[in-house]
Image (cartoon, rainbow, N blue to C red; front, side):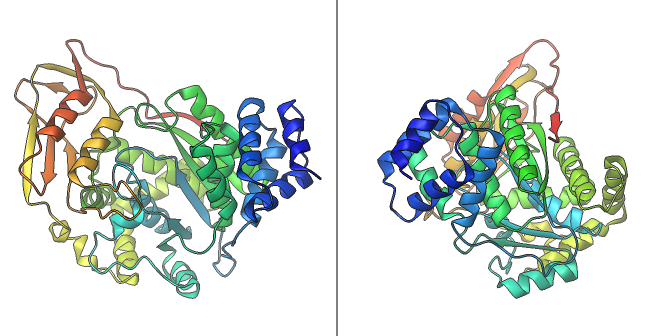
Length: 434
């Protein structure tokens, strides 16, 4: 078998076999196949696409290239959740304890952020003492005992994907549906989940700006998951404005606590209930999505979800008193306001620009070695559809410097206004099940 022949076959629209894909991924991972040949294959895949069978084979070959997490010691159906990113996406902080509170085991591996803010792991480290590195036995024990544990990604998961992604990044082949889908799904499958709920974002703050592209990606990932015997569904949600109100690490933890108390932003609460309902249903803890939602709403109303969050924090070395007194979280030195310079209804908030404003304050990292400031960020006081008077507060800035004029300018530029009332975008566009 020769890589040259496989490139030509795919270039001409042929379908690669599982054996050919395994040969290609194994050879590229161990260095037998050079970058220039894999670059040619990536471009061929970009233009010719892949069948569902090819996508499954590619994903499983990348899974097999490294370690696979064994969660068999954890009882019950383990359901993982993955979001394709966005601004103010605090869902894991809420979903992990919420879903666990109704008896679904949540064994979650999360990463650190390279973007607007830190990742879930960074946000959890806003809590004093919280430990994100656990050995496998401790991780399994905590999930069995408390139904929830969240740790940083470790080990040698999907090295083929890491190598291929770096190549795609410099060969203009990142935006390829089969390559994006197999990249995401290989990590989810290698992480050991039995079932997977995907939150695929669309809009100005999402990787997939266009709804049809988001649907195509969702269908590709669901096809891979189900083809790999992992029950998978995808929820397509709106990211044309930031989710919730808070963008920043400790600020998002505060918002997660408020949401678990039943006092969170409407959109963040609704998305968590939607995603959580599917997780509970896939775990066979409810006979319908409606029943699952009722269980989650009851867990919030009774305070059981909040108590599960406290147990989760304490079991991983953190101080659970932060839940009752969020002021213990890292706090920025100054609060500054961005006021509206005109009257009208908020018609648009460019989510990426708000995310960049938070990053400029120090909430995100530019490289994997950058240090982030857990205390800084922004809180949106007005969102799309809200009426604003001239001089009224649009955004509250939490900073450790008084000089933030560039941040204020970025935020003002992200907001658009109109004289007429504005119809909001749907929060949930679609649910893809096959």
